Structure formats: C-alpha cells, structure tokens
Amino acid sequence: QAHLDINLVPGQEPEQVLAAVRQRMKEHVLEADRSLRVQAARPAYRCGPEEPFAVAAREALAEAHPAKPVIVLPSSGSSGPVSALPRAFGRPLVRLGTGYRGHAHTPDEAVKIEHYRLYVKALRGFFEKAGAL
Image (cartoon, rainbow, N blue to C red; front, side):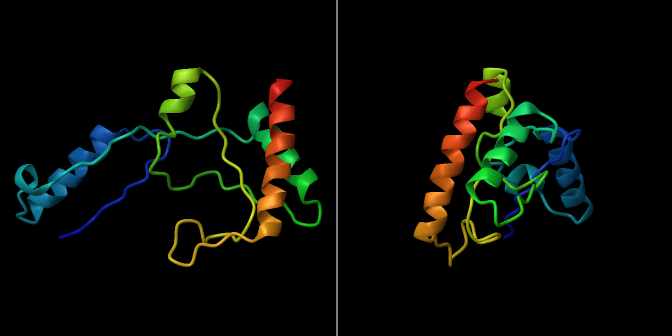
C-alpha cells in the first residue's frame, strides 16, 4: 500500500496529475482502475504576494510581532478546500499564523500561550485591514 498526498501548483490540473499517476502505475503493472482510490482532487490555488489581502496579512503579522520577520510561504500543503473558497466568494484567500514553524499537524504540535495571543492580535489587525479593502 502507498498513500500519496500530491499538492498541486498553479497550472496543474487534478485530472492531468491523476492520469499521470495511472499511467505510471500501468508502466509498473499495477492495476490503477482496481486499486487507486482518490479521496479528493482539487485544483491548485495561490494568492499572489501583491494581492491586497496578502499585504494586509504581512502588515498585521509585522505589527503584532515586530521583533520577528514575517515569513511568507508562497505554497503550502493543504487538505482543505483552499481552491474552492476564493472561487466561491470571488476574493483571494490567505492563511496566517504565529508559532513554531514547521510543527503544524505533527505529533509534537503545540501552541504556546504567547503565540496564541500574538495570533489573536495579528488576526484582529488583519480583519481591520481587510475590512478596509
């Protein structure tokens, strides 16, 4: 058994990636039609760094925690409906957070109270800035 979690980038389509996986399985004499189970297939999404929502998120994080640089990840793994929300609402989507970098959704995931407070402060700042857009 194998579990694949393939995060697409803009320009890739789920159907094309699934076709490539099926072809690769066929090349290795694996029966994709019988053994491949797709749990979700969503198109890629990326909010450009120049989008006003992205600028508002960076500014809010910088104001909430001026002692640390804001780290921008142009792409990150997601199992949620990240591509569906901006299409449904016609607005860009950004995600922001504070805390341990690289420990989200791992067995040792933890949140310090200090980071939670910074996150609430950053969210408040972001919503104020986003509300003005």
